[in-house]
Length: 107
Length: 463
Image (cartoon, rainbow over all chains, first blue to last red; front, side, top):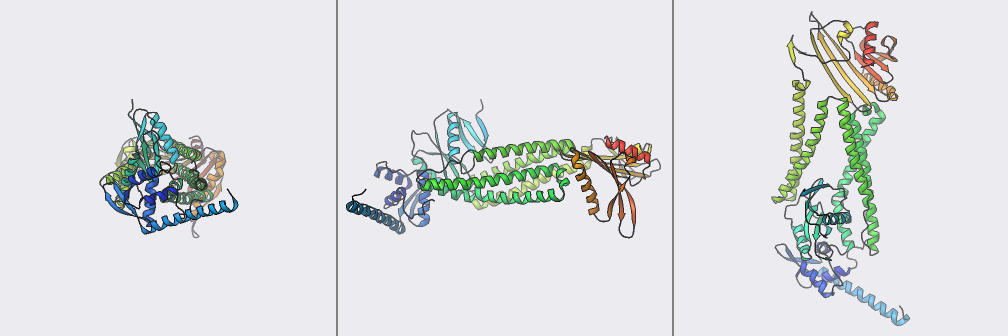
């Protein structure tokens, strides 16, 4: 089945929320993610549009200004919490990995 | 060389991959998609090019949104940054093109794509598909009921057979489309959950839609041919006009909707105005056609030859020939004659309705009325006879009694009897049966002699 909505963040969701720590428009979001990840993570405009819509509806981000067709967004407290929860989850994963590696010498 | 090309689109709304691949192929052949219409996609001639087409879905979009819509503009702004140019929209489906080498894909997360498609389909394709399926099931159910209770009525009507075929096709098609979507959605969800792409929609459903479309076309041609063969030629022309006006109505409604969008009218207002115009156009175009046909029919323009008035009644200047006339029965030439003949039925059953009324030299009137039912299959005779005999008894005080068929030269004969509990008498209505023909004749002003019965039988059996 498809992933439960926002239960965990995909890489693309993670980087969108991360880059909206500062106010940015959609085009800037795409450019920032590509630059920050060295091209490893790319967010297509269709995907970005739908994710921004979903984040807005979930209250994870808020719209800050509209200049013509350009819309800018910034992360909201709920989005910040989701981002931190994801970071915590990743830390837990990493910690479990290291514990496993130290105790059992695996993988 | 043609600069424009129209193509009937058979892709299903969720088949984004099929659309993308098809449009890229068309671009390579020098045809660029320009516009998506209600039935046809319009292409314009261009230099052949390797262009990438991509489709994304806007679940919140509607074909009644004002132009430019905010949602579409926001999407276009994002797409422009990655080199994607808008081409056309088809309900929630948004089509873009990119001629840059190795462009950034429009969609980079299959789970987001699948969710957007599913929300879009729930809003349009699935909702309307379900409504159409319920409607088609109800109509097909009514046809089945008619088939069980009065099969001859259904078999003897071209429009009944045509509409039955259409509703049955719609039931099959909508069921297949809805089940096909759910199958595709389940396969896609499983694939996406494992990190794969959405499933391919496959060609099966598209092929089925194409076959259904051809079958509708074949049914329509058969229907028009059967109408032309069994009814008056003006009825076939009427049906062609009716279908043309229906097409015109769809075209005009699409133009109105687009014009309202360009005017920036809100979605709700656009929908309301389009619905009102739908009703108005139906009344004006279809109602106008019926009115015009009625006026032409009753004014006698379609009858060809003229009429005159005598004794406050209308008579034919040159009466049309009928298989059997009162003159055939009495041997008398009548100075004033009025005749009418019209056909109906289907490719299985043809019904010829003939009517004649006359005035003799002493201004005494007589009339003759008969229906010749010709059957394409002799096996339909019992069904037809039963239907006609039951039709009359259903009306109340009438019944049929067996009569001697020998004087008529028929296989079987019946005469109608009236019985309301007080009065009981034989009427002038007879039913004559041959293997492939049934004649229902009304001789209200004539008690036929054996000689007249033989004339009737011979003329109507061979008419």
